[in-house]
Amino acid sequence: MKILVTGGAGFIGSAVVRRAIADGHQVVNLDALTYSANLENVASVAADPGYAFEQADICDAPRVAAIFARHRPDAVMHLAAESHNDRAIEGPIDFVRTNVMGTAVMLEAARAHWNGLDDAARAAFRFHHISTDEVFGALGEDGDFTEDTPYDPNSPYSASKAGADHLARAWARTYGLPVVLTNCSNNYGPYQFPEKLIPTVITRALEGKTIPVYGDGRQVRDWLHVDDHAEALLLVLQKGRLGETYCIGGDATKRNIEVVRILCAHLDKFAPANEAHDKKISFVTDRPGHDFRYSIDASKLEKELGWTPRMPLEAGLEDTVRWYVENADWVEGIRQRGFHSERLGLVKG
View 1 (cartoon, helix red, strand yellow):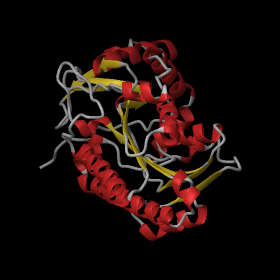
View 2 (cartoon, helix red, strand yellow):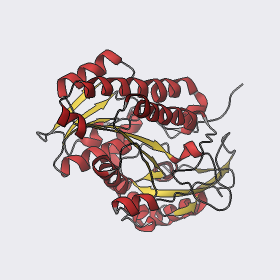
View 3 (spheres, one colour):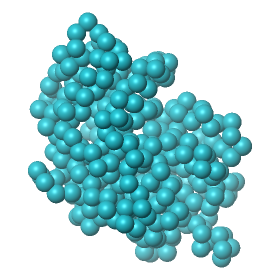
View 4 (cartoon, rainbow, N blue to C red):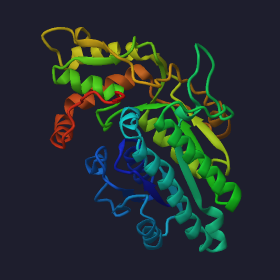
């Protein structure tokens, strides 16, 4: 299968690219190479004869159409998105442009391509729209998100992703485009740009800086290792029922402060400092619209397709800390591009 992966130089997208190549698929990686994208993330497969790279903005309709015409993919996995909540607070229009308009451009290009295929290729074609559990809003002290949870986004980022989800469903229902959707919980693992919680903790600790924790750190997240997620995404692409949504979770809910303390313990082992790393924890002003708790019920995916996460959270966090410690050159490359793990997401004015 030849798969067009948008955002394939990003964190989750690159995991999908690496896994797809390992599984014997051909991959066309379409990425604009904005600040958080990194071709080092796919360096291990860049020389594979089944891999091709196209630098393009998904909002550039003529360029996207040309990529479809040149490569004639059998499927699309649409991951390209602006994805950092703090940046969405500071620049919401960029998120609306990429996540909403960019998705519409991708859907239209895929529809034109699909309409031009022969009957067998049309029947086999898939457009997999990859989204987040944040579109569902926040949970209280109990309960889980399911595929039937009403949408209730609370931030510019989650609202833009909700809009993209609705567009994907609309193209499926209006035009018959063969679409599947997934909504995932918080991802973690190697190659994650150091602005999300886990890589922020690790990289700031390695720099000897304070470790910021929003509010009181009691927010709860369901943690999903990125390699488990990539496996699930490819499974849904190939075997998921058309028109259906599948929630993907790690079955590993923890309060943020618990995750931070686990990371600090692993840092004490792999990168010991003059004092325990948890002494650097600093509770800071919470970001606006910060959802309290996310938790995914992934039983539909397990029942229909037999998928369950493989990586236990404790082992995954240890592996992730080790990776960042052993890949200082990758982190340094991020710093040289101007990112210094600064605080974002404060409302100004």
